[in-house]
Length: 399
Ligand code: GTR
Image: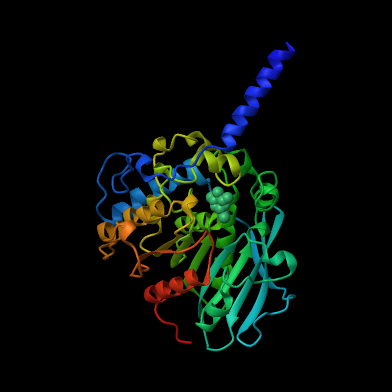
């Protein structure tokens, strides 16, 4: 009996070890043949050719597919929202920017959740200023520092006449598999927890971006019609899902968002659905787990998220050494998903180059992409291309 138990324990530990070491594929020749769902054929099998059919039939279908199978819902109902300025920290850029630390208080069903948004507004110029929101998951606030330059390029943005804001994901939903519900989910939307397609961490962070947008709409120094949503990696995934749901964002920029973000899941290159669901079970909804090791069964792929953002502008960026996030899969998903611009909206967008041929950032109206040298990170070089893309799409600032 004892030896049977120890044999079972051995088997169990071998399985756990194997799971932990599921080898990632980095060999392009081992990528499966891609069979991707067609964004332009409805679930009933009808071709989708017009803006009317796209916006009334196919777009809502695709949104529900992502909600049910991947991210979960983003509930948007609440009873009350209010904004109060709480400035306490020292402004790192007193000569060029006004700092506002804003508490956003949201109530629903007698309960209240407060999230903190940090906002820098140019001091020079008259505004209202276009704004960049960064969903942040790094820890600059922990030690009382608001900004980590490079990762959040406040100085450069403000000098170019942009307002910029950021919130830390912890202020909405902790990034922890045991605690993720301890913010907005348990407090305001507890019924979501019992639902297999309920809101989880990425959806909650997207919800936070929406509340920041509610604030932009009320702040007279900010032009909410020219708002850019940026996220890096896990927060890039959240930015993409938020913008698919909330069409108030004029430009969407997920950086190196990889698996469950910009990259095509069915390529199974680098991080896979099984790996991400095992390491971060709190990011996606429960139904997504059914696709562990079975990406081919997904009734969607990430290029369809690009199509949900259209006709608003969208930009993906990758880093050469960030193979975990599958840069080629990110580019292909942009290339395929952005066909919605010419096919449906009659707007010229083209990505004529193969991934291997890319040298310069592709900065054009509606859809863009760059891959820079280096590792997984959000850098000043990335922000510079974002500003070029935004200027092309939203116009030059009259500072
Ligand atoms: C990794 C995760 C990626 C990406 C990254 C990040 O550990 O596997 O999907 O989100 O974290 O957020 O930096």
